[in-house]
Amino acid sequence: MKIAVSASSGRLGHAVLRALLVETVADNVIAIARSPEKVQVAGIATRSGDYSSLDSMATALAGIDTLVMISAPVGDWDRVLLHRNVINAARQVGVRKILFTSVIGNGQEQDTWFWGTQQVNRQTEADLKSSGLQWVVARNGLYLEMDIRHLIHANESGVYRNVGGEGECGYITIDELAFAIARLAQSDRHNGQSFNLVGLNQSQAALERLYTARDSWAFAADGAAGEPSPEMAALTDSARQAFISAMDDDLNTADALSAIFDMVRGANTRLSAGAPAADAAAVQLGTAFAVTSECDADAAFKDVLAGAGPQDIVEFVSVAGLPALIHLRLRSE
Image (tube, rainbow, N blue to C red; front, side, top):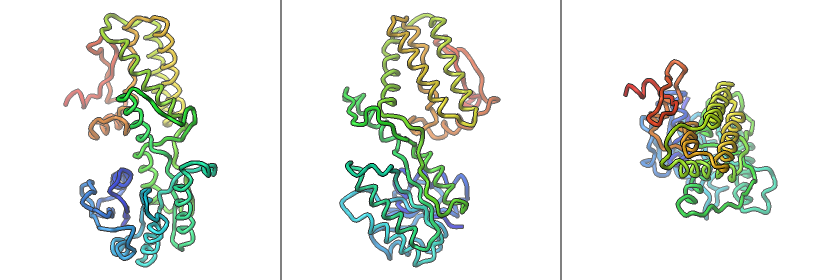
């Protein structure tokens, strides 16, 4: 079965292509883009296809069974028409199924800047459902990577600007979306359904608290010497064990995040009360995110960590005198 990903030269397109290659051989995957040379996923065939041209898309979709149609970017053009060109081209050349990457919404966007974007996607959903093709709608949540970029900019400028406040959002990473989209595209079990692909509700303010806490601890730990207090050692060890236990419990991310925020509150309370600098040095917030898109570590490094089992990990004492974990393969290399 040939699966194509259109508008595949962007971040989501690249992620979906990589996710598909985990599940099927490269010969079954086709990347379609207006500028195919921008597709940087090795081993797959590329085709030129432009949403603005029905004929171009018909040529690109020849012989394709299933299409992952990534929505056209927001801009000064008719996105509804662009999407219709893709759907009509698919019908013309015999594509059997389309998965459309839409966008989430709760029906209360009418007075926000998000309204226009959401309405275009809803119209495309309706067009797809009436096309006579098999279909799946994957409504993407907001990319966590975008807010991380805002936080990084705030760190550089010294000012964090955010209109969201404590408003919560089901943030999700691009790789998580790609994981779900690849599976929905390859299985017919969920055809004819719409899915809201979102993560746990978190606010921008909650994400900012994690970054502020991390920076505050780093500042307080500067020049630290000696051992952390028994109370701080107990706090960090308890948080680590709670995090590991939650993730071992079928990836219970809600409890895992709760363990992190409990540690943040406890550590901040102690440091505000005048705890020694060694206590700040004992708090490490980062390992939990080492395999996520937020971390800029090499993909091969992330793969090693993500695939680690209990037999792969050993505990040792770091140069700072603190307990640490290392993967046996990373140690040997």
